[in-house]
Image (cartoon, rainbow, N blue to C red; front, side, top):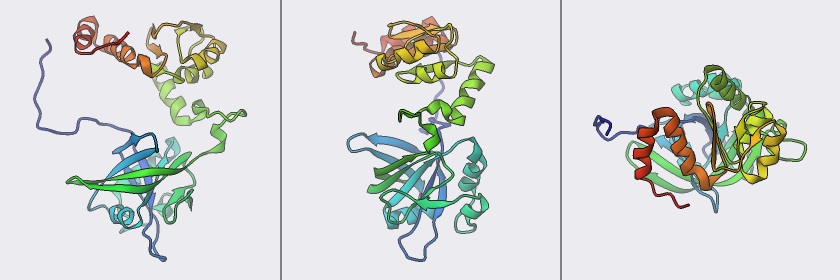
Length: 267
């Protein structure tokens, strides 16, 4: 058995993807603000809901608490500097919109909080629960509006994530550096669209098998397929098998056997 070190209770889920959250107080003369938030998560599917956690001393905290609204804006590489700036500077002291050359625009079904026009997508949320947890307040929001930039869609109306710069660069970085790439459900079709499955063994959700075949993949119906440093899997029902293969790739057979003994797989 491997050796372990003991830590005081702490959050080890880092780093995590960060977003820019836009908000505004309900007063007529109030100005909107932007805060960078990394503690973001999906909490429910029907109705769709998500949460953000914000420190009580942050300027945006009271804006969200007063208005009962916030907008989660997804970012791409072009806004990395703005993402950093909005996380280290306070809206009490600077106009982040002006400093970062960003434009507020009306968000669907929002009375106060705007979206960021330059971001590729946003989720508009109405606060349904506010939990005072200690250092942070968790705002649970019902998602009442979503918009995605038009150039990320194909002519048939499907969302083509492979057109997103961040997705392309992440995959290209992994390929150049020989880093592990794991894709499940529809995600293998993105690899195929970018030409990365040409001549490789792969699988995908049945609805996307034709797409990976069109991209030159050698298609299999196995729950998980490993081809060098690319691991593909069929869907949510095969996620445990995918996880074990990732463990095998990174840590070896002995460790994956130990992990598997603690997991119940229904086949």
